[in-house]
Image (cartoon, rainbow, N blue to C red; front, side):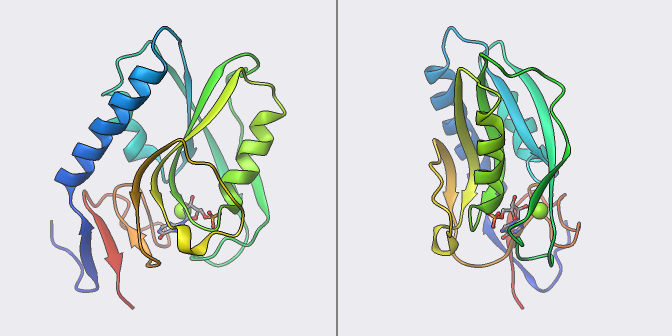
Length: 175
Ligand code: IMP
Ligand code: MG
């Protein structure tokens, strides 16, 4: 695939595959004997979710929510809304949220609070990437793929203004 000149590979597809494999082993082990519901956050988690679920050795179900936050492309404004709700009742279920990247923590802490009110049996978070340098709201990440530096990353589901989600590697945008 031809990369744009301003994109540099930060995490290669091979490294991503190995990490997804590791996360899948941890999750399969921890949820043995249970039937978790994986909740993906659209749109960013769709590639990660697709790879992860195919490596999980569990009788799982999945669903998606779509959130929107007002503000410019690279910064969450702090106001998060659910624009597409879950189709599944989560009361009493073991829920595992699958997110692309935790940045300030605003988006995911909103969603975790929202889901907690629906009384799941358990609620955990799996994130592909974490940018801890920018955290404003503390977020416990139960399963983490990568810690990334304070740079804007795209690819493997992550976008900039809706572009680059299809890149197979995680790339850094140099501006
Ligand atoms: P937060 O609410 O500040 O934690 O932002 C989280 C959301 O912002 C993620 O779900 C992503 O959609 C988006 N985001 C944060 N950092 C990046 C990045 O480096 N690349 C692409 N999207 C990002
Ligand atoms: Mg996004």
